[in-house]
Amino acid sequence: MLPDNLKALNYHEWSQEEWEDYNVRVCIPDDEAKKQFYRQVIFDHFEHHNDHYPEFNVDDYDYEIKKLSVSYVRDNIGFFRGESLADIWVLQFDQFEAKDFSYSIYQSMAKDKTPPFPTVVIDSAKRIDSDWRVYGRPLHLIEGTHRTSYLLRMAQRGIISWKSEHDFVYLTPKIA
Image (tube, rainbow, N blue to C red; front, side, top):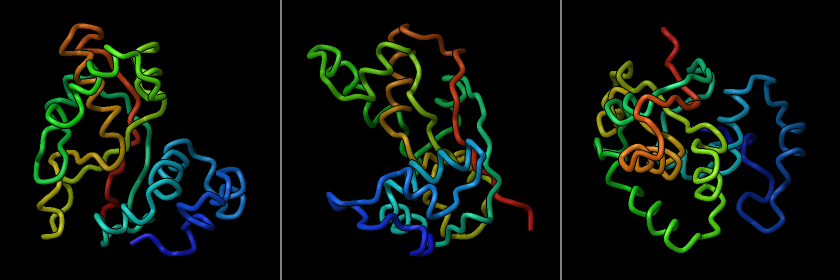
């Protein structure tokens, strides 16, 4: 469980503290992978994360940025109860394309052919406790369903190659 002292002040209110102020107050490590995790998961989705990952402890993991190919993502990253990311938001990419929808993630990916910031995954295959049985294996997507689904759809349509590589924040449980 993420401790309350990591929760943004006025979390999910119009007056939520700014990322820059949060960064200083919490003293986020100067490591890009950990900074991305704090920004995407703790700062933006604190309560959601605690609801879905009550056993999670930030210090129990090593964090790194890894490049993964889209085919590797397709074959190895799952979502809750093994749900395939190819079944979640892939068609939304086409719908947004048809309307040139203003959603910033879509716009960035349509232009740059890569996510604007890395998706967060955890090596769940190394988890053996019963609470982790419902998570995707061998990797579980923590944050980035839209970005990952859009990558899969772009590869399905030939906009990018299945071999193209993209950045992911990769969490590995520390060996006890």
